Image: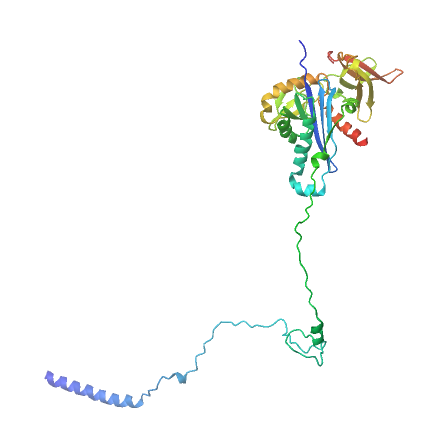
Length: 181
Length: 215
């Protein structure tokens, strides 16, 4: 039976030294990049900080960076993975694609790979991607919980060929390389 | 008999009455009760009147010694202006015009344009892929002859690995896949093990183990 192919999308938006920047990496199930977009670091001016006030962070993150990146990505992934749960709703809204936040844990491994159990946090799940790692913490919102089985099946298949969290580190290293250039 | 005794008793009583009245009427002193004989009544109240004292002494304007306008003609109670000053005083008109158009400066809020996206697929394609040491998650540590397991990295497509490098500080393995997708197939998945070898020329040894094989 032919393996069902899918793509995983990784999105980060970070703030460093008052600069805002974001990147979107789409990989195949082996972790090979098929699309990568990033934004130039943006530093709001003093006037912009005053005019936008408390809404500046949200505006920059959602209206400027996410909107820009998600519109630019040509190869659409099957799911978007983010490292910050605040990004779930805006990414899901803009991309119309299932989005979940994912983070490493130091929990003891669950019974076997593919196991997914609800965590204490609302919309949270502990997920054992493979047999030789700690479980990952997944956070979904909206109707994401109803699709969690389908999502974890995809992630279990991907974990056989790659480390699920690894692309986040690659994006960070790519940011540093871009800044150095 | 009874009538005679009652007449005698009444006569005696009236005689006694007459004599007593003569005695007391002459000796009883009758005095008037008048207010003037008493001390005047003093009415004392607890009503208090506030005593007002000024904090500041009342200032009085003395003579303005710094201004001695001798022989100055005082025409009015206002400022004193001499005739010559008044004659030479010229009033000029000033045109106050408001410009019809006010300059309005615009400030471009081009924050969205400054966050333009860029594509860098080739750059990220050249970036190394990393793997963490997963040895701690093995349920049983496999045993090797005259060797001990130091690290386990998984999964890797051995046939596609072009080069690799171990970061001793973090213990992570960094490697690069060959980007020529058409020429080389991915092949099977492997675990990559790092062993410490005892009694050998090389202290460290790398071992590829098919991922399908249980550890």
